[in-house]
Picture 1 (tube, rainbow, N blue to C red):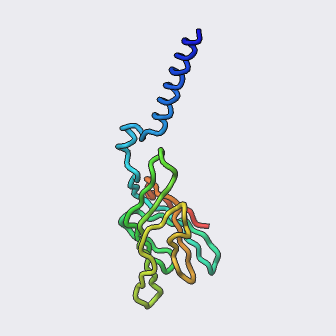
Picture 2 (spheres, rainbow, N blue to C red):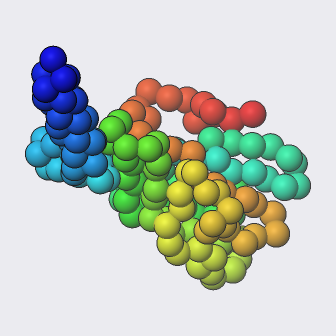
Picture 3 (cartoon, one colour):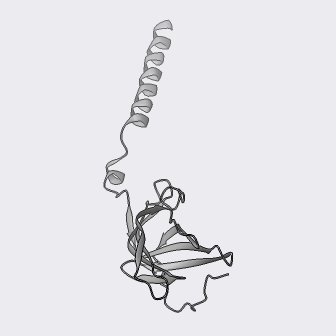
Length: 149
């Protein structure tokens, strides 16, 4: 009887070791083929006009520019993590300030991350802009005032 118990203990230890090895092994081959980032066609940003205290949602199709106050915002790319990873959206943006009767001046050129709005922020006396998310939604059919407060 003692021998059988000893054999069961080895079997139990072997099964436990197998479970630990599986848990510590890299993810299965299917998820290894999954990309870390998925491109999306639309960047959703929020803008704050510090003078009026109005917050607006700014939707920028990738490859296009939109105007927010005196800012011209261009989204070069917008990407997000797949659902199997921690939520994150990032966009590469170019933001130029063009007050009336002045030449445009680039005030931001780089990545913005939705989870870290202060990491790369826009330095402007009147406007703040930060990343909300990437989207595959089209802006077709929305009114010009959609998303504005």
